[in-house]
Image (cartoon, rainbow, N blue to C red; front, side, top):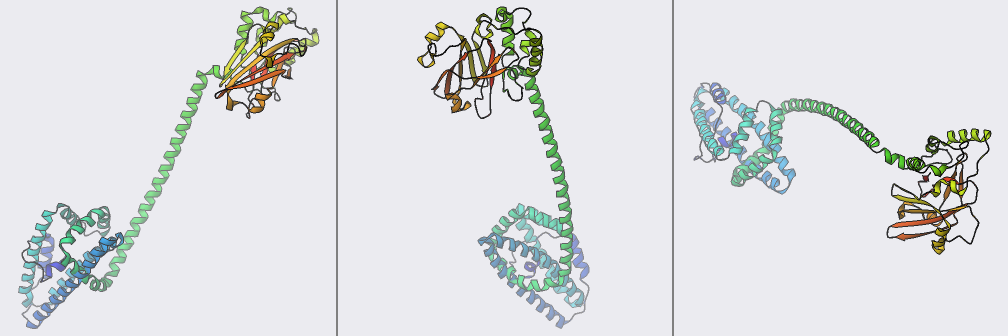
Length: 457
């Protein structure tokens, strides 16, 4: 409760005393000095008190208007808060004016001042009684008293307790409409008096600017530290991803060796079935039944796909010294057993066909009566429909790898057909070898837009 309520004659007399600091009482008592009795000055004091009462009435009316604005919009709530702050500042100014009046008055006014002080003490006791019934409002007032000397700290506290203060003020103002109206009336008059204290406000604003600059500096430092932390976190994640990739690459060597995307133009081709070929050469030594003078070793066969240029040069040198050997059907490396490969969602099988096998084929793949050939092979591809193009399904592209010089030659597919089974597709193609030299492997593809190729040797 402010000083305007203390000096108002309309203020209820049955209210109890508000708490007041002992330091303020001592200051008031020191300011009161004995003055000579003067009836004229006593009248002036009474006139001054009436003026203050009129000011309080005006303040209360304007306070009522501010309450309605606070209830209507949030902006009016903010304006009421600022007006309350100004009222707190004006309270100190009025206290200083009262002290000045007391200093200028004669000792005859001492009795009147003592009566006024008793009334103020009574009202302070009443204020203490009201605050005891509302613990939240009491804690806020105590905080404002303790932080009264430092305006910046009080502003921070008011911002933190903004919502609570508005709710508490709304509850108090509902029961105190008349007092709020008096406060509102006095605000307009106090604004003129507030101009005299403009210098004090300017100093306070300068302090606020200093605090804001310090806060901005702290924010900049925080942003820098935040960026450094994010950079460090990204670096840690990058290292972890590289570590995980390295671990998986070490744990899954078979998948790398089984996947094949060769490029014939650049002479870099990875074999999908090097390991299978080695096992076949060991378990079926007759698969490469060639005279000892012209036979390639197992190591040379295993390195055909990984080092095609090297093998080509080495075999070329051998061909210069020794005559080439034309294999018979018994020496066909692909005729021993069906080769099956599974990689990246593709199932590919290669099988050398006999005359009996050709007679048992579907009519769409029957070529026995159409062309002359040395040997025929059935290539079967099963995969998801989206993993191959329509052009490849209609006309599969297959290249043959020969043993002499590791030559690649695109072979025209003699017969082919495909069928779709739900989301999957099965392609069957017949390729024939018209040369005397039997092949050791095939290259299927490109099969899709990514130029995927599968090599079987």
